[in-house]
Image (cartoon, rainbow, N blue to C red; front, side, top):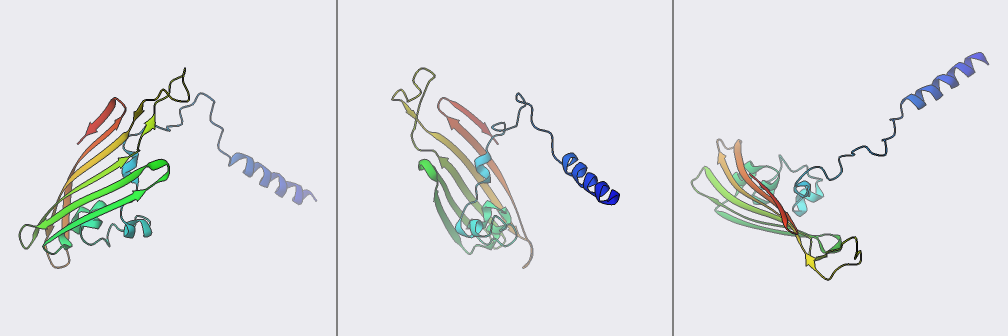
Length: 174
């Protein structure tokens, strides 16, 4: 009986000690404290279907979202378009174009943008709206370069311009 009591007490104590402490009511939970989270949204049917694990298996311009070196797999020129509709009229769009410059050099341009659709502006005095609308528009433009070093090794890099715009405020970065 004594052994049973010790085991039960140990199990209860370990359960209580393994619980994280609750957040104080005024604590910052880091929600809304980072920028450009929309860039984490998957793009393209193959990448979405694979859960974003297309980094090494991507071929062509559709894989450049995950790995810029995948542009070195295109033959000639390639265009890529993707549109994903989300709830409340939000759309995530991808446009891309890539071309072969020389037998081993490739160049591409990728445009990602997220559009919220019209959102009605509200105030504390008019929580149902004041009849004025605005859009949230997030844009990412990438220039991509890829190079085929051997028949089995390709490398790539990109330069990205990011802009987030909501109502009269915007943020941009390279």
